[in-house]
Amino acid sequence: METAIEYFTVFGGVEIEIDTNKPLIDLIKTHILDDYNSFKNKIHNQTGGYSVDHAVLTGIALGDRKTTTSFKRAHVSFEEGMKCVENLCDKGIIEIESPQNYLVNKRGNENKVAKKLLFTTPFLRFWFAFVSPIYKGIKEGDYKEFFTKYENKKSEFSDFIFEELCMETVMDYFKEDPIDKIGKYWDQDRDINIIAKTKSGKVLAANCKYTNSKLKKAELNKLVNDCKSINLDVNTYILFSKKGFTSELKSQKSDTLKLLTPRNLKILV
Image (cartoon, rainbow, N blue to C red; front, side):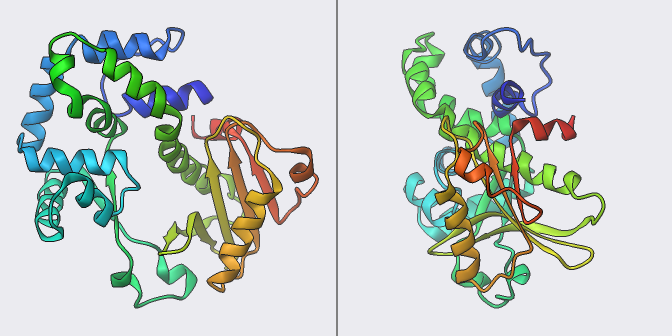
């Protein structure tokens, strides 16, 4: 599943048959970089090819997805950025995501926190993060800068896709008491990757970490403290980890603490 996640982060949403036995970097070169002009034309037809729109898309792809941060990266005003967002939403390229304040009884705070922007396919996010910003070298067949940037950021870049897949897993994992509402919560001080409420009224809160080290008890403590700080009464905490958990954290596993790894994501297949 770890391999599947990494490949999906790049090729999700593209109709290309991928051989996961081949190194991902080789597949990127063969199917994307060597075929740059073809992909560029298809994407420009989809986006309209406007430079400001592309700058905003790169700002979204490389940052924390918040509107304010994305526009700052793109060097555009908030008003100009929102015009681009409306246009790109109409074209089905991105979606606007709001914190699920109603799940934490904080209605009315929506306008105080920046919304986040979500690509509709992983491939478009990959393209505007790593290909579009350095297109000149790629167009000329020089991939050195791409390989450097991608190797430096690929683990961090996969974190968001892992988070999205974890959300889908939560939907499928709790079948005995199905999920009724699910989303994310963030404000100026905290970020909770997943919050959900089951049909019986139980509240779930989860964080997802796609790092190459085992999660420690400190990650659980942070999640618990973040939930308490917004007065969220949680019945079950969930941690997702790429590389598993320390023995100390494993000893805390119970009906009120679920520890899940990429193996648990097989439920989506």
